[in-house]
Every structure is written in structure tokens, then in C-alpha cells.
Image (cartoon, rainbow, N blue to C red):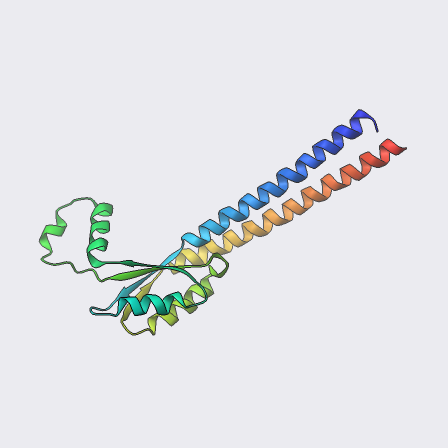
Length: 174
């Protein structure tokens, strides 16, 4: 085998490795994007929070459930809006207790969010379920398209690199 054939094989193997790593990292990125999407479940006053958390945790699509007290929600709102003084005009905290629900990444699709939202809305003690429906309907198809494009590009590059290796081996034997 001559040096040019060996160099072509080494470069092709490097392309295969880099492509595989790039596709793997891209899928990791899209998975983390899907896992960050959340739903807010607003609770009625006096709702049985531990029972609701347990019921929600048993839903197949649910990855995590976090309780946010109305006091914590007010602190978070003040932090986001800044201390504008608007909060001094409100005599009491109008925010409800809530649960933040995140779905497993494999279930993070608009239709699954709607299904889970409908299920959560039927639970006793739940006053409202909110999530960014328009954002999901716009962004998740783009994420899915990106995954498909990355997979196709990865397969094409691996095919080209494999073909280059085959040609280099055949050329060195001739």
C-alpha cells in the first residue's frame, strides 16, 4: 500500500469518526432542548399537592414534577420584572401554587403535550394547565427536521468515506 492510499484511508476514518461524533452531539443537543420544555399546572387553593404530584408522576410521558409555592412564584416574578414598585400596590399574593411538569424527551411532541395537558386538566385540584403551544408547534418540527438532516448528512459522509477507503485499498492492490 502506498502512502497516498494510507493517507486517504486515515482521512476517511477521521471523517467517519467526526461525522459520528457530530451526529451524536447534535442528537444530545436536541434531546436537551426537548427536556427543557415544561408545562405549568396551576392549583386551586387547598388542593392536595402531594397526591397531585404522585398522580402526575405516574403519567408515562412525565419525566419530572416540581412544586412551586405561591410565595416562590412571587419571588421569581419580582426577580424577572425587577423591583418596579408595582408589587407594593397589591395587598396580597394573587399567584396560585403550581407544579412544573417536564416530559421525557422522546414524548416531547406537540400532540403529546396536548394529550398530557388534557389529562392534567381533569385532575381534582387543578385550575389551569399552561404551556407554550405556539412555540412547540413552530420549534419542534424544526428540531425534528434538523435531526433528520443530520442523520442523512451523516450517512452520506460515512458512505463517501467508506467508498474512498474501498477505492484506496483497491488502488493500492493494483
